[in-house]
Length: 252
Ligand SMILES: Nc1ncnc2c1ncn2[C@@H]1O[C@H](COP(=O)(O)OP(=O)(O)O)[C@@H](O)[C@H]1O
Ligand SMILES: [Mg+2]
Image 1 (tube, rainbow, N blue to C red):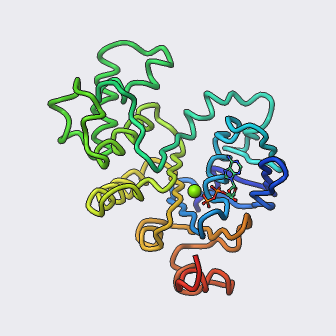
Image 2: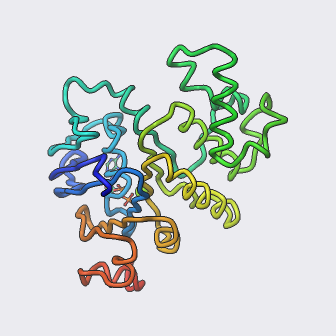
């Protein structure tokens, strides 16, 4: 039985007066890939960011309800957000490597955590780059700038940077939509491999991507979670008319 690693209970989120999430309740299962789909502006990114408190960085945001990680309320007063964002890492749509070497990009989080022993860093670099399926591309130029890489390679460096701190959950917000199809496929294949060790939550506007890589799919519409189920079920036999309309391309 797969158990929930994250549980959201009646989550409402407001940007000022605008209610962007209208009572989201869902469970994210450990060791699975959960995809979030829905038309632009329906709250996918907002919900994703609420899972590691990235919305805290936006002014005028109010959130109610509860989100638990391993049974602990992440909005509780004893939750350390730096620690939380290590446990729940995030990858964005636009690859955002730092203007440092490939090596220093990957070890960034470890250095912040005070880890500086060369051996440990070297090992983390190789392991993370291998997991991100980019070791062979970059192993001979680790001291070169990450900014010199292609977009797809940069995105894999960003994924390696998240993996280096050994998170439990990886959040990805449309990680391939700025990339060419070949780079996108490489990242999809990598995520399928990573699934063995991590829980993955991915926002995607590609229904093909959701159906190819995810175990569970959540369909959002206008700030509500309309339906969440096993991916096959959502795409072959959705319960809700709105889901059916969306996946058959009638809107969005
Ligand atoms: N920083 C923000 N400030 C104010 N409104 C926002 C902000 N981010 C998103 N929104 C609004 O919240 C709603 C949900 O947006 P978002 O979560 O980005 O949707 P999606 O990722 O599904 O496209 C939209 O109406 C959007 O305009
Ligand atoms: Mg978005």
